[in-house]
Image (cartoon, rainbow, N blue to C red; front, side):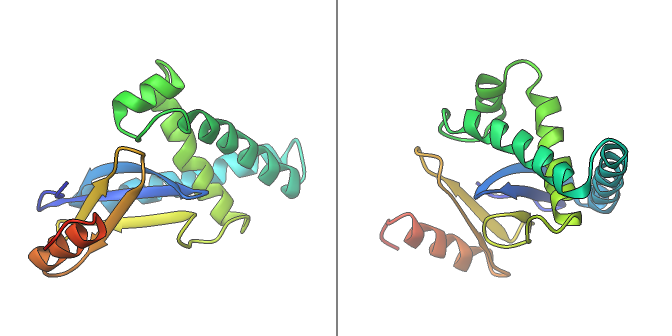
Length: 157
C-alpha cells in the first residue's frame, strides 16, 4: 500500500503490533502534541491513586488485554479492529496510542523495533501479509523501496 503524497501514517507499536493512524501531513505535529498531552494528563490523574510503578503496570495490562484480542484477527484494518474489539474499537484505538505514549513517558518501554513510534510518508511502502505480519520500507526513491518490498515478500524482482 502506498501512502499518498501529502499524507503520513503514524504507527503506535506495542510488543511488535502496530496500529496505524493516517493523517494529513499538516496535522501530524498537532496530533502528536495532543496525544502526548493526553497521555501525560492520564498519568498525572492515575498518580493520584497509585504509584508510578503501578500506573505503568495498569497501562501495560490494558494494552496486553487489547493485544490478546488482536491475536484473533489477521490484520489491524478498521474492520478487523471492530471484529476484535467490538463497536467501541475507535475508543480502544485511542487508548492504545495514549498508553503507548504514556509508557514511553514513564520509560517503561523504549522506542525500538517492537515498541513506540514509526512515522511513514509517501516515500514509504507498506505490506501486510495474510497472517498479519507487516513490513514497511522507507526509502527516498519510491521505486527502489517498492523493489525492496517485493524482495521482502519473496517475489522475484
